[in-house]
Image (cartoon, rainbow, N blue to C red; front, side, top):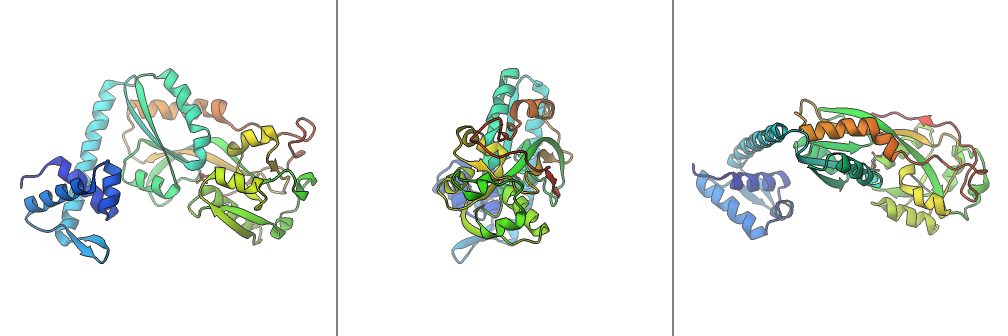
Length: 326
Ligand code: PGA
């Protein structure tokens, strides 16, 4: 069989996505270029590898076989690359970090200091949702992920390195802003602007209210923290967000943190990588750096007290509530 690594790589992407379009996007190729590589591989194999299924594509039996080989070939190539990187030592090499969207509020700060310390390492940062993070971890396409809850269905190692308090936010004109120790049951009368279902913030918030036996009213759903904050500012409801995301709004008094019993919810940020993965020296340096210095560089500012920073609220907040991290 005369085939090329490039054909296998392209095939692997189409088979993983079951879509020529998404594979082309991922590989930064045109769709005809992707189709051509797959056709050439099918000619080399002497069998069709894909079949049309309605509007989509599926793998034939031969395609499934080739997919399993192409995945293990890709993994070996990646391992070879990692070994070469490690032979170059920590002062050179690449680092591929993928983070959950909320992490974007502090990841660039961490990378900036890391880059000053290791200028020879070229970092790449992908900001994405939890579902894609899982896929990237599962396919071994990244060195390290930074996320709220480590996955339980993929074999990973994880280390927590920093607090991630979740708070209830409201516009400054909201009547609850001036109240202290608001019972959670009072929130059932409010509408909540929601993050998308895959968001770690949303999952933690829903779990908390479920544990309290409360049903909250869902308002609009938004996939970005920025959109959620704008919606809350515009009076579309309250929301629960990470304290990391509202530093500027608290400084300027554009959003308020409500003093609700049980809040802030105490979550943590985790570094996550595949168990058994041979971390490159660059990735090891990044892991050590984040664990040792992450909180100093990127911890969220403490919540302002009513006395210290009027008009930003609120007074002493209730003790953080530990919530499950499963
Ligand atoms: P997210 O944050 O809500 O942006 O997914 C990550 C997390 O808290 O797990």
